[in-house]
Amino acid sequence: MTKTILRALAGETLPTPPIWMMRQAGRYLPEYRATRAEAGDFLSLCYNSELAAEVTLQPIRRYGFDASILFADILLLPQALGADLWFVTGEGPRLSTVTTADDLKKLKPATDIHDHLAPVYETVKILSRELPDETTLIGFAGAPWTVATYMIAGQGTPDQGPAHALKAEDKATFEALLDLITDGTIDYLSKQIEAGAEVVKIFDSWAGSLKGDDFVNYAVKPAAKITAALKARHPDTPVIAFPRGAGDKYVGLHEAIGADCIALDDGVTADWAAANVQTGGCVQGNLASSHMVTGGDALVSETRKIVDAFKGGPHIFNLGHGITPDADPENVQLMIDTVRGS
Ligand code: CP3
Image (cartoon, rainbow, N blue to C red):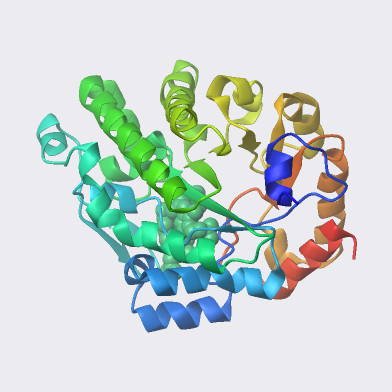
C-alpha cells in the first residue's frame, strides 16, 4: 500500500490527513539535545551521518509521524559553494558575506558541491534503510532567495534588508548569485533523490518580504525552475514548495511553480486556503507553532478547525513554521491524537 503522504501528494483526499512537523527533530526533545551534545555542535551533527540519521529517527520512534525530514540545514549548500559558515550559540548562523561581483567569483561552480555534501547523501541512504516501511523520507533545500538573504547579510535579518539593498544596487550580482544557488539546489536535491529521498521540499522562509514583481521573479520563478529540472530528472518525485508569508499570493502557486503541494504558514486561515489554494492541489499546514508551547483546549480546537477546513481535498497536517525549543513534547502528542481522532 502506498504511503499516506505520497497518496495525499498524488491528490488523494484521505479520511485522516497524514502528519509530520517542521523541525520535528529539534531542541524541544531531550533525546535530540543528548545526541547534539554527543556530536559537539550543530554543524558536526549535520555532517555526522550516523548521528544525523539518529536524530531524524527520534521523533519517528516517539510519535510515529507519517514522514521524516532529513536532518541537515539549508545553509550547508552555501558552505559547499565555498562560504564560511558557523553557528553562534543562542544567536544563529553566521556566514562570510557575498556583496560584490568579486565575492561571487570566489565561490565554487554549482557542480563542485557534492564532495562537501557527501555526508548528507549518506544520511539519506542510512534513513532509507532504517525508516519504518510506512514512513516517507523528505529531502529539502532552501529556496534561492532565502539562501541568498543569509549569504548576502552573513546572518539572519528581520527584514532581509541587505539582500533587498543588493537587489536594488547591483542587480546583476544579485541575480547571478540567485542563479548559482538555483543550479546548486537542482543538483543537491537530485542527489538526495538518488540517495533515497521520496519527496523534496523547498523552504522559502523569507518569500514574504518579496513584493509585486519581485515575488514572481525571485520566489516563484526560481522554485519553478528547480521543480521543472527535478521533474525532468525524477518525474515521480513529488515537490512541496513553502513560500512562507506569501499571503494572498498563495493563490495559483501550484500551477505557477509546478509543485505537487504548497505548504502554508499560519498567516492565512485554513478556511480561506481551502477555498483559494487547495483548489489547485494538495496543501500542507498550518497550525501556529505557538500551540506546541501553550497546549490545552486552544490547541485541540485549532487543530480540529484545520483538519475540518481541509477535509474536502488533499491535505498533509503540519505546523505553519518550525516547532520552537520551548515547546512541550506532550503538546505534540496531543496534536497528533487530535488529528488522528484518538
Ligand atoms: O525540520 C527538520 O527537523 C529538519 C532539519 C532542518 C533544520 N533546519 C535543522 C536545524 C530544516 C528543514 C531546517 C531548515 C532551515 N534552516 C530554514 C528554513 C526553515 C525555517 O525554519 O524557516 C532556515 C531559515 C534555516 C537556517 C537556520 N538554521 C537558522 C536561522 C538557525 C538558527 C535558528 C534556530 O532555530 O536555532 C538554524 C539552526 C537549526 N537548524 C537548528 C535545527 C534543529 C537548531 C540548531 C541547534 O540544535 O542548536
